[in-house]
Amino acid sequence: MPHMKDKIIRVATSLFHRKGYFATSISEIAGLCGIQKASIYYHYASKEAILYQIHSTTMDDLTTYLKGNLQGVDGIEDCMRAAVRSHVRFHLERQKETFIANTELRGLTPEHYALIVAKRDTYEQIIQEIIQRGCAAGIFVDEDVKILSYAILTQCNAGAIWYKPGGRLTVDDIAEVYVRFALQGLMVR
Amino acid sequence: MPHMKDKIIRVATSLFHRKGYFATSISEIAGLCGIQKASIYYHYASKEAILYQIHSTTMDDLTTYLKGNLQGVDGIEDCMRAAVRSHVRFHLERQKETFIANTELRGLTPEHYALIVAKRDTYEQIIQEIIQRGCAAGIFVDEDVKILSYAILTQCNAGAIWYKPGGRLTVDDIAEVYVRFALQGLMVR
DNA sequence: CTGTACCTACCGTCCGGTAGGTAGGTATCG
DNA sequence: CGATACCTACCTACCGGACGGTAGGTACAG
Image (cartoon, rainbow over all chains, first blue to last red; front, side, top):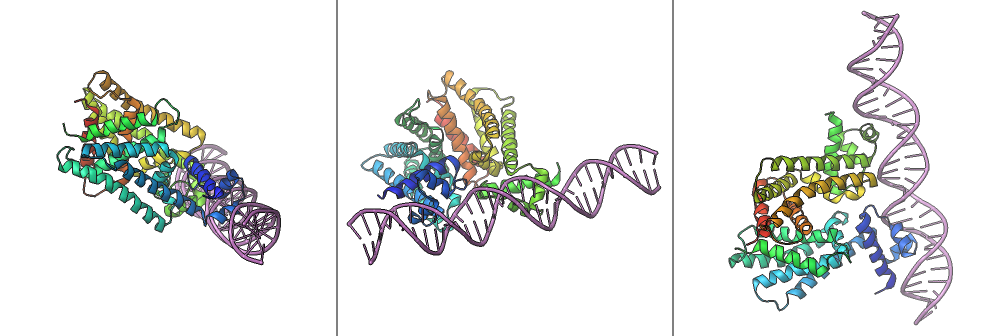
């Protein structure tokens, strides 16, 4: 809610995305916020606290978004479609945050790292449970569930790397390509 | 060939993989090599030169490996299988280097960056040409070739993140899972 | 008169990189 | 053969600068 606290996150997100966490300095963030370096420490206890905040809210939002998109969806196949669609859309719409969430884990303290990994596990378990049910029901291929889930999630993450807003394809176009490709790979013939 | 020059690369690869390029210091590399910081500069002109060397040889080896694995393979489907298998195996066997190659582009100078991106494009074009031929022949699904290629390559890269040598599955096991999954997603029914 | 949101000025540390030196091996040449 | 020159592979000592972070102060709002 406070204006500057949000602005710091937005600016830091942009810089961490473009240059990386360790290559970004506090004074650089402050400069783009129009304040002095020391003023950052009024809002956040440390540089790592900013990174953790980005990780934490991104993972929470990602999981909330998935749960919302699965609400009221019936059938294993449709659940899987909804899950992939949700995953891709979120990654394209929140490109910078998800990129940071995927690449800047090493900047976290061990305690924060553990918390974020726990959040990620929660998310992955929702996906893996759907795949598991599909495999058990015999409609999905009989492969290692973890490998399948990582393969699907990661291929969608790729979108967040090359996607340029306002390009040739819309978010929905891309999401549907990934939904078709993932489901085609998953369903038994 | 010289002993220490190689050792620096090996140590740097390990550190860049574990901590990231910017979070790794020259003195840390030197310490693990058993020499003084200044001696690093006898072998390499700068920290970035070490990173570039890792990127460069990794990309060259990756492309050479792919070309070797495609040698004498006939048929679009078999080419694609061989390509995916090659890609996965290389990424699992050279886990650290490929991880760096995928995540530490930002540490390169603009000139070196351009050279590495060019190498990567060359590699991707080989894969994309196979997919293109498959699509044209009507045996692969009619989707955007670039998206398909990125999806397949990226999902395989994922292996390099979670794979632990000596674990439950061998490199070949994993490679075959990815080959089946990718081909299943690619082939029309 | 208290809390908020900032400021200036500064701290110690570590960084990438450089200067200059040296031990020991090897090649060149009278 | 010995003397000289040079090269390789390292060393110690240092530099300027940037970093994350802190101390202490201030303008202003309620």
